[in-house]
Image (cartoon, rainbow, N blue to C red; front, side, top):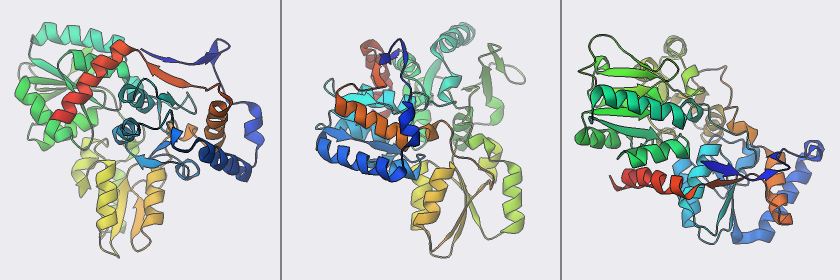
Length: 367
C-alpha cells in the first residue's frame, strides 16, 4: 500500500501562517524557490487545477501523461505533483528510486478511485470467478489506487485511459469472454457500447451489496462494471442537453466519457480531456461549444478560444473539489518544506505493489 510521510504521528497539515499571506508574496516566493532548485524540481499540473497553480506548472496534462513526463525528467530529484493522490502514486511508481514525489495536500483525493478499495475488489473477484470460472479479465481505469492497479496487473489485466479505452477493451475481449471494469462504470459502459456490445450484456457489480445488478440470466454477460463514478462528470444531465438544444440549437455538445451513457449518446462528440481540448482548439472561428467536463478546464478553454463561444454544459457546475484542494498556500508550503530539507506529504508506494501495478501499465502501453 502507499505510505506517506507522517509528522508527529499524523498527516501534516498546512501551517496556519500560510493562510494569511498575500497572494503576491506567495507567488514571488514560489518563483524564487523554483529558480533556486532549477532542473532538480519538477511541478506537473493536471488540467483540472486552478489557474493560480497551473501558472507554476512545468507541464500540464492528464494523469498518466504527467506521470510519464515526471519519469522522463531524469534530472528532477523532487516532483511536486499538483493533482490528486492516485496520480502522485503513479508518478512515484514510474520514476526512479532517486526521485521523490510529493502531494501538496494529502486531502486531494479522488472520489471515483475511493469507490473501489482492494478488500472489496478481492472479495468481488472471488465471488465472480466462483460464478463464471476463469473467463474474466480485469481492467482498471488509471483513476484508481496503486493497490487496484496491482490487483489488475497480477491477474493478467491492463490499465486504461479515456483515450485508449476502446483499444484496451478490444484487446481484453480477445483474451477472455468477460471483463471486470474498475472503477468507473460509465467509461466502461460507454466504451463497450461503442464497440457494439448491447446494454443487456452488461451488469453492474455493487460492492456494498456484493452482488451483480442485472436483468435476466447471467450466462450472456460480457461486461461487469464496477459501481463507481466521477462525482463531477455525473452531474451533467439529459436536462442540460435538452436546454442547449432548445436555446442554442447551433451549438455543438462535447462531453467526457465519464458522463452517463444517456448524456454521451445525446451529445455530438465524446472523448478524453485531450480530445476535447484538441477539438475545440482546431474548430473554426465562430463555432459554439457546450462542454461537459470539469469547470477549471472549461474556463481555461473559454480564455484560450476568444474567437469561439465556449460554455459549460451545466451552468451551475462546480470545479472538482478534491482537485481544488491544491492551492497557492499548499504549493508554497510544499516547496518551502523541500527547501528546508524536511519535505512533507511524500508519496511512496510499496515496491511489491509497484511491481505488480507497473505490469498493468506496461500491458496498456504495449497494446
